[in-house]
Image (cartoon, rainbow, N blue to C red; front, side, top):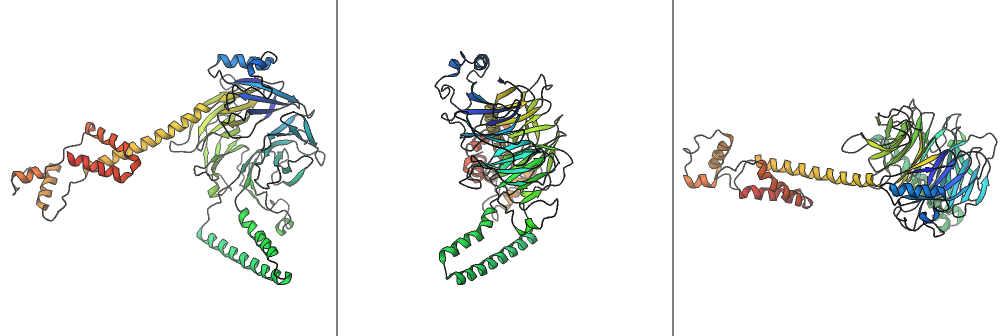
Length: 545
């Protein structure tokens, strides 16, 4: 579904909220080159198709007065996704300059928009009124290129924080409340900021034994020093327990802050950086910095000798942190970064894109959606048991890949929105991809269980049939093994026990594919019971033969 706009789109933002809730409509904000902001409501993606807007009007009613909505309803009714449509909520122009980037607040009630001159505009989502405008503190600042609203409670429970990056490579931390401005800034990059990702938990890098021992010794030394300081304060303050407890909390704060909340930044200078926004800027280390050194709490990667244009994180299957970071480059490569190995350099690369990868968004824990400058949005599997591969084209911003470059892609649930150098936004339903991923994972598990069952049946079939009392029936076992291997042609003459013994110790019947089918069926039904139960059932089956 294509949504026409009044001018070229520069950035997109989807409203936050729990996915799939009917009472939470999906809103799309678009920043335009003309300085306008358009807010659209997407129906058919979050379960609120028949609810309409806040005024009670459905898309069909709005079609009578809104030509844009009318075209959307008619086009959606003729397509396979007849329930998917959109409605225009409002249009606002906070600046005469172009709107470079925007994002919703964590609550979804406020829209943050940055204009080209560096001003930050607070817009009320419900009424479209401009709540406040914060002008840049100094003239000739770099134009904002990216912005990201941090989740509520990520750093402070009482503040709404916002991060922005500009064309000069400066990363700024803003207080999102009305009338507030820049809190801190970092200038370790020297080229434009291309993407920002907030990691609630970034897995610490693995260290060797010597480094662990060194860190443990340093930790014990800090604890002893803090203990002596607390004892001195006790004697000086007359054993004030409340103050001592507050001092203990201050000493324990750095250890809790190692809780690994980090901001990951990519830049056109070819480096990736990790910023700990909690790190103090007034420490001795910050005061003794040399020109060009990164500030405390900042880690900068090696130069990748290529522009890093986009960034996304793959969620970990354990639910804690990210398993991989995926970075798109100017040369069309996807580079993989592992937090557990440190973020000083990439660990793997995936070639294949014919042009630069300008936008990235994660689909699941193994697959990403890439927006390239050839106008195509592709699905690429970067990890998993089936290896790295291109899965196909999800959206096309031109005829056969010759369209406008894809500058932004955003996803919430099964709704994917993308825009390029054009006056339209493309909305794609990727819910089927999410369902197919679940089916593929179930199929992979089924194939693994079937392979395990076949391997178990093969092992049972070729294993020698021993007796419980090997010392008494050793001769019969040798005769049986000889008959199975084809070397027991005279076994009937050497049998001292006669026909009865040969009947008791007859070799097992050969296992054919037809005889394995019931075994595999029974083993699949018992797979949840564990390997031990499956093995016992297989042995009983062959014993019955």
